[in-house]
Length: 295
Image (cartoon, rainbow, N blue to C red; front, side):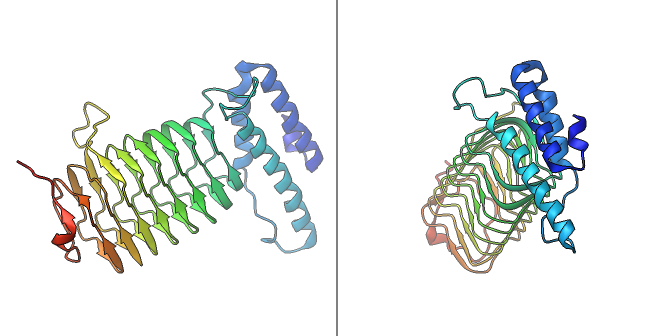
């Protein structure tokens, strides 16, 4: 582990590969070594070009290669579909505050994943990732596109105060449990088409600067926790929608609110089922909405 503290990038690389081999040969050390590699990625780092001087840029470029290697070593052990004994089951990740570069987690399986205040430089891929337990993206910043298509979140999921500067893609994604996007900011298009929410959903105070598509999404009446009496609700209170807000064919939960929500552009609720919806913003036309029979 001392090699990771070396001033020389090749020595740090050698240290990462040595840790990887040690964990591969000793299953009981896998979580500990995953923690060590994660701690390395949480160390302060500035991307190349952010510091003055050629020497600084050269060091940052070398460190970039070390960090990309650390990312690859972690990811390769989190894909259940991989052949052989490379998959490390039950691994928990804490990458809070880390700088991750073009981060690819496609097809991985994570339990208790923490990305609070993480900076995702470039694009971030979470296609078909299975998250269980506690998942935290609070305050995370996505500089490029964020792909969460066909991912599954089971447990407590939070994207509160997250910033999406590229496209946010959550098509066909399933959320089971409490899900919070409170005060999240979507600077580009946000797509939740055919997403399925089972439990409490909070988009309160979220900002959708451009297009927000929830076409054919489902906010299901499916309580997850026995003691959670409000497990059938969806909240969009004070959310602000920019160029387009489409909720065509959406099946809302039995308690859905849009209190003080603002719609600046095109709004569509054609074919939506809003059984039990308590508030409607004045821009919504009743003849575009089908209310389920409450009798």
